[in-house]
Length: 145
Ligand SMILES: CC(C)(COP(=O)(O)OP(=O)(O)OC[C@H]1O[C@@H](n2cnc3c(N)ncnc32)[C@H](O)[C@@H]1OP(=O)(O)O)[C@@H](O)C(=O)NCCC(=O)NCCS
Image (cartoon, rainbow, N blue to C red; front, side, top):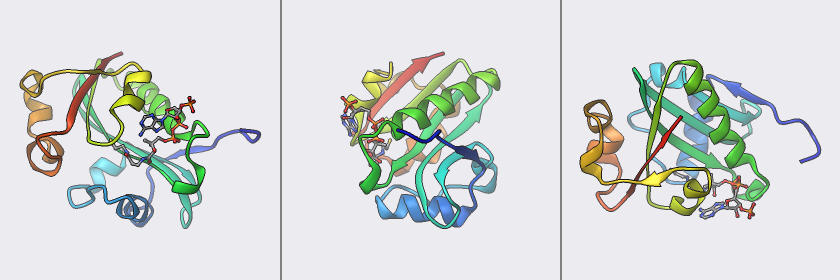
């Protein structure tokens, strides 16, 4: 990348929804509280990347990671995940969990390991992504910060 990357926090709901819907990722459970811990790249009206965290004490769920089709494989996805990790650490999060059907190998490269769903802490088990929105076949992964 030749230009410095600008990652901004708290996207407008319409900005987050547009990117997620374009990739068929869940939007129905995103609350305004969640958006407080979301980050995006691009302009409000034309975002190119998004990532979100749900924070539950020392545990967090990383979710809603998406990079626009036309700007993939340039490092944006990795930058967004690393930004979310740094933010999580600044909020005293110790473990980041996630569910994915499409990007297990991508997250493995970033230090996440697959674990059994039975190892989920109760706060993560109660999230709608875990309980209902993501299929049971999703890979469940964790990274300890
Ligand atoms: C997954 C996603 C966010 C990656 O974004 P990206 O900006 O292309 O990622 P990066 O450029 O940082 O990729 C880093 C490396 O991972 C690889 N990679 C990217 N996506 C991958 C995937 N789905 N599976 C395996 N490897 C992947 C890239 O090739 C790159 O490797 P390289 O440096 O050797 O080329 C993007 O593909 C996407 O939005 N996918 C659709 C939505 C999705 O699946 N989100 C995850 C939901 S949990």
